[in-house]
Each structure stands twice: as C-alpha cells, then as structure tokens.
View: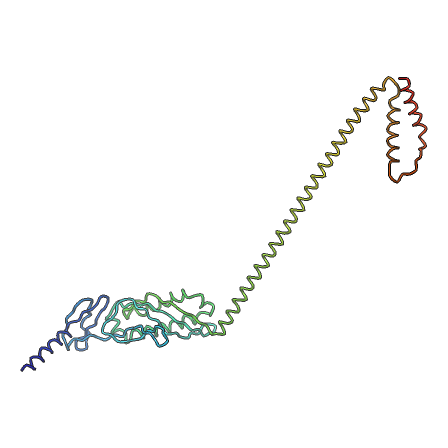
Length: 323
C-alpha cells in the first residue's frame, strides 16, 4: 500500500513537472497536440497537458570549437526556438568567376526568426535551407563578375545577396538582416601574379615620382641660375652706369675747373699779351711731356714745329719781361 502511494506521488510529480514549461525572453516553443500544431508559447510560465501535448523539436545553429581551435557552426535540435538575431558562419566554398578563376569565399549571414510557426512548418530544415540558398545565389552573383570586379565589389555582392535571401526566406518566417563576405582568396598563382603586379605598379610610381622630383629640381636649379645671371648682369649694368656717370661727372668737374683756370689766365694776361699763344704753347708742352714720359722712350727728339713753340715761349718771356 505504501509503495502504491509512493508511486502515485512520484507519478503526480512527474506529470506536474512535464506540464509546466517556462519559456525565456526572446524564445518560443511550438506545442503540438497529438502531432498537430496547437499553439506557440511565448516568454513566461505555461501549462500543457502531459502526454497529449509535446514541444516540437527545431534545428538550430550552435557554435562549437573544433580540434584546430577555430569556431564552427554546428546544427543541433532543440525544443526552444531562438528569436534573437543569429550569426551563421558558412563553410568556405569554391566559386568560379566570370573569367574562369576559382576563388574561395567565406561568408557570414545574420538572420532572425520573426515567425516561429512558419520557421518550423514552412521548411523542413531551416539552417540547411538558408545555407544552400546562400551558396547557390553567391555562385550566381560571383559568376557574373570578373576576378578584379569581385575583389572590389564586396559591398555590391553583400547588398544583392541580402536582398535575394530576404525575399526568398520571407515565406519561412525569417528576416535576413546582413550578409558579409569575410574572405575572398584567389589561387596561389593568381596571388603571386597580383603581388608582382602590385610591386611593379609601386616601382613604376616610385620611378615616376623620382623622375618628377629630378625634373623639378633641374627646373628650379635652372631658374635659380637664370635669376642669378639676370641679377649679376643687372648689377654689372648698374655698376657700369654708375661708373660712367662718375667718369662723366669727373670730366665735367675737371672741365669746369680747367675752364675756370683758363678764364683766370685769360683775365690775368688780357692786358699783357696774347693769351691764346700762351695756352697753345702750354698744351703743346704738356702733350710733348706725355709722349716722352714712358719707360721705353729713351730717345729725346724735337718735333718739327718746335720753332713755332719756342717763338711762342719767347713771346711769353717777353710779356713777363715787360711786366
């Protein structure tokens, strides 16, 4: 009797435990009654009929760490549907571009279940369906682009792929928020060729910059030499002008002094003789002195006109004798 009562108590406790379901925030539980959809449980405590009602298992993506230390997405079944945004890291796949180059692409998909019932009943395996749909559409998009276009068109591919997936998964109760291409890895031969091309382009730019620098330096040097030559010529010109002006002014001053001296001589000799003969004689004697004053002039000679000069000198002597 005691054993029977204990059995009844244990059975009642098990029934109570199985009839109470506590659903956490941002989760949902699909309840089936005798294999048919009954209701969707939201956040909070709920009571179900044991044995008759049962939660429906749902495939979900769980991140696990592999033996190589990397994080992988693994599919497992759970009786609770996560309504939060989920990140699905797709395995790396090979895709052929328009110019027949095989590249390896790794993509991330951010999606969110907005209708738990449709996610369970509208598609047999939601994560696998999203993965296959993403792979096929990614192949189609990349197949329309050449390698160079693919490498520089990540944003365009992301937007187009997100638009296609969001439209296709709408009937599954799923909202695709973002698609990100993580890595685009071309073959090793293509990578080597691209690296060589990049290095050649960098060398070409460096050569061009160096040549432009040498050209600018030569131009600046030539301009500097030109300006220096112009300034030097201008300076020499100004110096010559000033020198000529100085000589001219000196000659003017000398001529004025000589004129003043002549005028004084003429004034002094006006009443005593012929001043013109005196001046001619003095100039002739100065000229004769200059001719014979050189170091190499060893011969003393008397010019033919000396008699006329001497007569002039004699006339000067007579004028002074009269005084």
